[in-house]
Image (tube, rainbow, N blue to C red; front, side, top):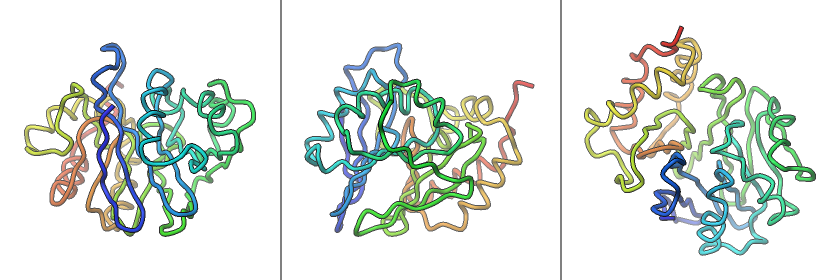
Length: 242
């Protein structure tokens, strides 16, 4: 599994993904870690199939006892089906996730982890040097869904919003936005069900200062491409299967 440091000033953001050894039948995913002096959180830590590679990669940066928190933006298996294994490795960690999904996430082999339910309005997680914000992204695409915003590093971990399905060897950042839209179009039109929910999210996110938009699949957006993505997404009709 490849790693990329996105921010390293006082605390650290790391992306994990582009795993060349994963089975071809498994969708490629981006996992993230934010490590401060007081707490370390894994954001959408991945499916059960990538647990071993993910744990090995994370331990290059922090000791296992330093990992205090997990975050799951929603209930999908590619995001959090590894929960039962993380619970064994991190017996004292807390799981931050939408209140809606606890009864579903327990099906992933979880018995004892402390469940920190996020209310529909969002919330915060204090890591020491930075306080992360849980930004509502309901129905994009899950009915209970959150993204994670760092106002200091100006990074928005955007879950499935901004996702593209590409082979593991794809570059880290978008380098030709117009060409990249063809890799995103069908995914967003089919997986995002509601134009109303989409517009609510766009109106909310336009108020944030974002240097990097970091989705769970595919390349990341930075600089002017963040605004280009918001403009493109705003115009895109979604929920096309009905």
